[in-house]
Length: 284
Length: 192
Image (tube, rainbow over all chains, first blue to last red):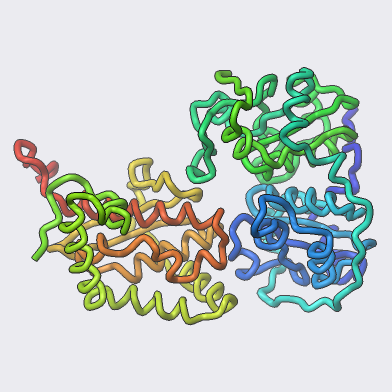
């Protein structure tokens, strides 16, 4: 008997998006690694929210404040009640990252377009280069969820020392310490290679099918529970290099498998691998 | 006439301002000034692109980059078959393949980048269009602040532009490789 996702409503299909293109209660948001993609053609009516230019503070390594977040939502025509559907390139890495950031600010209804930008284009669905103008809304930031979904370095240290589950979702070579950066991303490296003691290597891509959609609940369970031995009620922390790949794993554990206590360590290896006296383990 | 090779491979650092305090500084500073003069005269194509992009506003710049990305000519079939690790630019996050040949001191560049990575593809297209037919010295003389000068840093933000620098460095290395005569004792050219 095959199981369904714990929160199946957070994953929407391309058909669903097509049916809701003109639904005023739904806003489609594109978040990509490559900043030009949206302008080359996007889902009609969708807006671009950039993980770096929009969601990150440009001075301090942190996210924007509540006022700026409210301004972004207002400009995008998003109200606190809007269903926001994220999609993007690279198997939805940045879509998941943007979703996680929206959750930091307590936005209620956030979903992911399964398969992201690639599947939409592969299926030759409609795109446009027209940038929509949505009437500005009055957006008030709700209860922030930072404490429940974001982990900071001191908490991660305590977590590691307590032997609680830590998932390292980077490539195997980054985990062993052979590489101090992600393959092909040499400039986002760190001074030390390896992983946080006690972390288990589960590369993010294990949760994905080749077409960029998520694996089934059964397949995900056999990986995260069968192989890794996680239990749904455990406190789990996931990390990668700057927190983007681990926000995808956070999404999988939280919404597809229904784990209530998963946090993303967005400081990730770019912080830990440069942190003076932070304990590090090497090897497989 | 300045002869650049053979000799130690040129590193990007050779052209950094910060090197001017070392004993070789005078020499490099002279080369640098000489090259700057020559670039002004000879790399007109690249300079035209630079001024077009730097004068554009943010949205125009995005559209220009997309045009460049779309305009990158496909690889000739003979090179398509040679897309291997040796021709892949490791420094870059997207699969970028660079092929550099020289014909009588003129540089010929071919490149392949997937359209799914339009930023990198657009930047590579600028290099191909701006530097094809330029001399070896012209290419080596392109300063590494090109990415800033065409306003890419402003659009992309710091985290994204750094990979692009790798493409320019790699291009220079490939140009040196393609233009250097083989070392003595190994003069036999395969296939000839």
